[in-house]
Length: 307
Image (cartoon, rainbow, N blue to C red):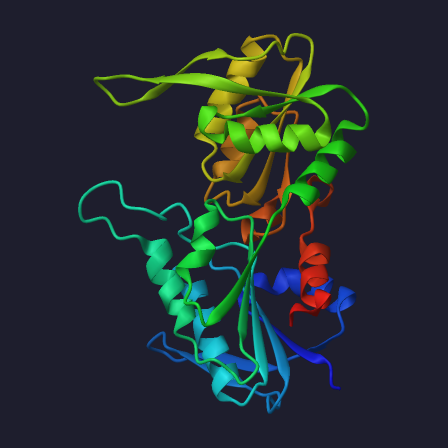
């Protein structure tokens, strides 16, 4: 039986070496170029006929969404036997429900886009990593088999490595993430904590009003599922330090870090370290010692007879 063909979209090329080193894959070949008007030319050079194919591609941007969609459609129509799409970061995952009238639930419309990819004879499987909301995987059509891969084992291992046996408290930015942090804290055998916030009735702004746990003289590891601008993270870190914490570390499943977000987080002076997985291209801004790769976990899932 031939090895599985492995393709990735350009923005996830940084994860290719890890996958190719860990899995029994043959590197698929594509030709990409751009026309003067900005349109993209895409050609799959590898022979796809009756091959099992893996496509790696997170969807942080609209361009990435179309890269995954176009490539997967071409593979399915090119005669592949089966298709596995690995999505380390699902774009628009915080737009999973409508809050105001007329809001488009983009997480659902993008799930429909994935569901419309032609199904090869052996079916399509989609692997999703650490979604903001569990229910997103069920937005995809029933003809697509999905698996939500949780990042807790990866995150907890990184925390243990960084803390090196030192006592610490696992903190959340607010009560809304308390359940996630409580679950991780149980796995780590440490105490959880979160900050109380109140909303100003006039401005709508949120302000920290207190911390629910005694963090005096202790280090705090502050967990959030994703770090974007990091404004709420800085606010929470200041609250923990104000409550007597000696240091605050930050860790996230997804390091989005757009624009100068990382520079602002570092300039705040409240974090002893910022850590996370390499699920998002934004993670590549951080030193390697602060990043833990998701490739071993994702390859393990692909190798577990699911493709």
